[in-house]
Length: 256
Ligand SMILES: [Zn+2]
Image (cartoon, rainbow, N blue to C red; front, top):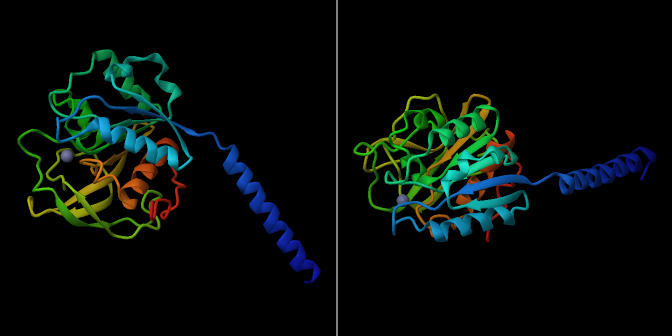
């Protein structure tokens, strides 16, 4: 080995070591997972919430706090979390107080992250700004889905941090269709709906003020959340909403 090669190898070893040390030192992303109300028994939040929490924690990237009372959105301490994950839905969900609404909007506008999952798009039907906040909502009487089935999903933006390196995949889930909203969204994953006869966006992002919102419409139940593709998309949506980047490898959950 000549001297230049030796130096190159030494630099690579040192570089790898420093990178590993940086990774180990990187503070965990603080996630507030709000749950506690959903369609019963179709959406078993008591099962899906601990399941998603375990997925996030298995990545090593997140510290997750679960709250079953959406009144936490009134808390002045909301800013201690980097991102809010909503596993919370249904149009019978209690409305938020004016203080909670104002606090949540300010939280995102000021640069924090928000990830609504699956039927979170149905909550707060009487709060018009919720549509602008999350980009697309389930409007009662308009949105819908066909029978739960296995369907093909297409990565339509392979260059985004959330989808980079991921191939098209199958999901055993509900395919949400005809959601409402006109906020400009960046569509990352789609599927063709037999129910709406349209190509539907299922993972998409947008910005609200200085904040990042990644909406992920998958996740009817634990079975739907148990695939490698679901787990990577969950982790990456949460990481991207918190930081603007996603570092969880595309194969992080292969075979797990
Ligand atoms: Zn569902």
